[in-house]
Length: 448
Image (cartoon, rainbow, N blue to C red; front, side):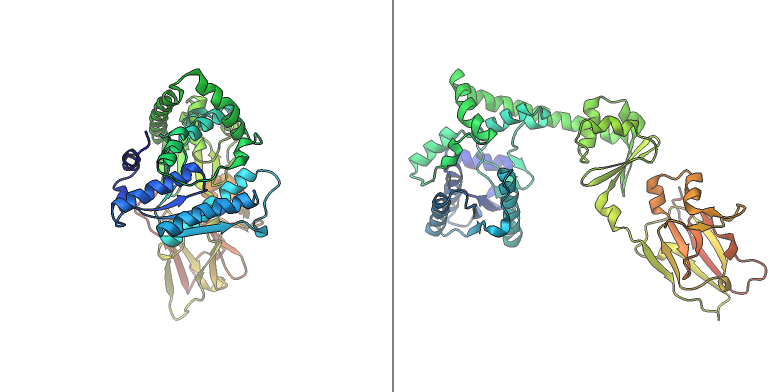
């Protein structure tokens, strides 16, 4: 039964010391969200205003003419009466309502608005009024979409900084609480229409299910709890398997392709899904792809490198500098100048030691470090003749990721002086006639 005490217990189950936290309540004006606001207000009154610091946010979508304005008024009046800070977003022409996907558009708009308020007002938790009937509807929707155990587990009661403390209470209990405490609320008549799948399930399917068993919702709540426990167990096992497959996990993650390929399709999908590769038909393509093939999700780039799968954060990938000024001039009053690459800021650590000696008179300053460009060519030391840098990379059997970490040393004429840290161009190397020498080197204790 929904009471102030049972509600407070739910909050305590979700977070530590809920009375000391700060909250933003999403309130639409319907029974569930107005009961949520009333419960928080009751807890604040009990603490004489010293605890349960919360504010309220409402969005007027202007979708139901006067009814939308009346919804807003109910929420606003409640806030004014109880001295609660009220935040309003009124949808206007600039928000560009789509003809289709109204629900998705509305969801993105409100969560963006809520996030802005939380950041501005320093409110830690967003609280929504989802209840047990919402949970059942979500289960049935996800069941129809073959969404797997995560989807069948439904709406989480806590999702990072989003709390849903009414999730264990039925719609009937919420209406009963509202009636007993004289809480004013508005009914959204559009919920009676079967325009959307959720409404159709709510209005036609759920009532028939509830008729089959007096304890249907209670039994569903228990089943939902079992599913969540199963999901948590499976996720821990998936993480354990992934940890055993991880070869490297610092600037990027490398998974053993060979070991992952031995796992079930379910395990492959669950691991790669975490990195945005959530299309089942894409997974076999990854394991059949040739060396240096790339696949892209919204946040990650996956590179197939022989028996490895390299996962690179695309944001970090794009932030890599393309050119660095290494040395603007040479002081010819010195016979030799030493330049330690390892001391340069904004350059990724080079895990290989090398020493290159140049004849400074053969160089055109300033000198630069940059990434490879089409047409780059040089005369690598230890080789006869000229070689394209791209061909040199292929001969060295470098992966795409390894190529990205290579720096090209050039002069002001854009001539390639060397490929760091692999080969120097022998045309510019110091010899017995050299009077002014430039030493470029790198030292590392962790050479790979």
